[in-house]
Image (cartoon, rainbow, N blue to C red; front, side, top):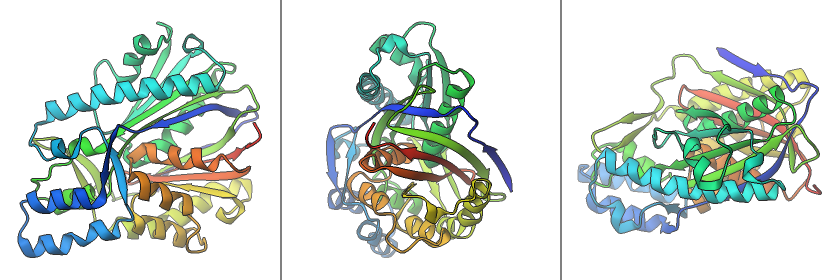
Length: 358
């Protein structure tokens, strides 16, 4: 099993600002269920069986870049991606400004910008577009991270911390944008796409990091593991009308059987187990994935309350979701373990410590 682990060296990295945001359109679970049920090109008997996923997904509501009536209209990939670019760059400008301000900095103080996304493409990329929008320096150095899906949150934070360690004293802005519902096609004939419509939501987040402390939280070691022979279990593919999600029924079983050993291998160097952490920031791919993570890490059932609450209120926002969970966890001191699973299948992990008094 391929595994890359980056130990926390003697230079700590601290987060000084964190901000999250969603697009304006609130969509209730039953509203999207009715839209999909009335439009999907799926045989009636299969459709009736699939409708149960909306009740069992653990999602009550989410936010979308488009209103419900617009989600139901057919559109091609260029139109969908245009919605992504226009909406994401505006929301990122908001969260970037807020995170920078919270850190006590000005936009021109940022030296690096790490940009994470999977659900849209832009050239110039989403980080370049922020230079003029929020007043970043023209010589800011950019690190785009694309295609990690739900694992991108933990991976993006880990790589942003690596940049900060490599350039002590620099200010690193990490931004993530995922507008998953832009790609929902109510007229789909795909069962996987139908299931995805019960889970995903839209959101963005920004974090400012540096080696200057103390901060809101510190970032320790991290790891990234690809599970062999699982590349077909989880993916996004490009269809005629947008991105099509691939979610194999085997994903909860893969998570349940692999994430425990991966976490054990990652944590053994520090002599810790999952139960030694005050907070587990686990990406809520679905309720089944949350339950599989709890079982695999030998956590008491119901431990991942934060993951369940964010899933219920915002849906699965791909890479961005763990930042919503982490932001909520900042109310209490203690060590945290962040874990996320994405295409590859990739398991990403980051450990750190929250300083609520900072």
